[in-house]
Amino acid sequence: MRHDFSETGTDALEPPPPTPPFTWLGAASPLLVVPLLLLMGVAMFAPHNVLDVLPIAKAFTTRMGESLMWIGNHAQSTNYPQVALLMACMTVCILVWESVVFFLQSLVSYPTLLQKQQRHRTVTWRQALLVASCVPVIILCTISAFAIPGDLSSAQGFTTTSRAGLTFLSVGLAYGGGLVIGGSPLLVRLLIDLDLRRRD
Image (cartoon, rainbow, N blue to C red):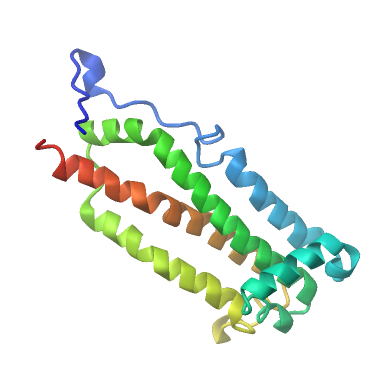
């Protein structure tokens, strides 16, 4: 399919305006931010026995544990195992959610993104391949973060004794991982349209 965005006049020299961050298609969309706020709320305010207090949380973590048997390993090494287990399960689910949202945002915004790159090329194949190569790394890091008990020797107590540390790790994995996983496919498609299909 050929994409033709040729125009005349001064408008052809000006790229489309950037997407405001707090809109549905922005980087701070409620679809992205609300799950992260929920995760942070659990981390900061959930009681130590949250799984005993909330049967739905207990059922959720049990089901996740049956599917991902490694997910509770790190939690058992913390000072707040029930909260840490709930956070681990939520982080994995939110990572999947953020990836889907970022993918759909990119899909909807793709014509505008393509138009911008046709006028003002900033993305290269090296950048796209680097981002795509980070996908398995993020998946491996997520598994390692919750499957390996304790902290790194250089960061003892960062997540095992501090809820804030585990929150920082979980939010970073969920949002950053979702951005990379969700955006990679359309980034590669963008370069294909720019370089391989422009001769059509």
